[in-house]
Length: 86
Ligand SMILES: [Zn+2]
Picture (tube, protein in one colour):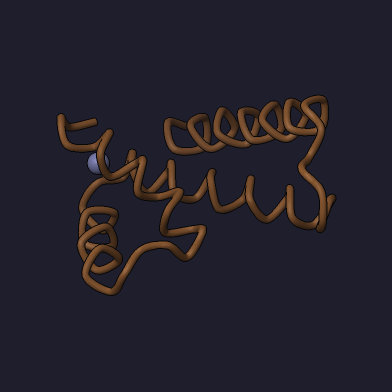
């Protein structure tokens, strides 16, 4: 990841929460297009958010559930890396 990536990664959450304005969204989108690690991060956050919303629509997900989701995502990521390398 580049030096500016941390900044963009923190904005991914804002994007997914619908808190970014058009300018911020376009800037982040442009970065995601040319930065695969950040795009990865975006995909993972998007999946995580969807899973949490689906499993618990009105309350915060309990820590155990969040851990399970994170473990599943880690597995997905490892699998993807293997596919890319293989
Ligand atoms: Zn980046």
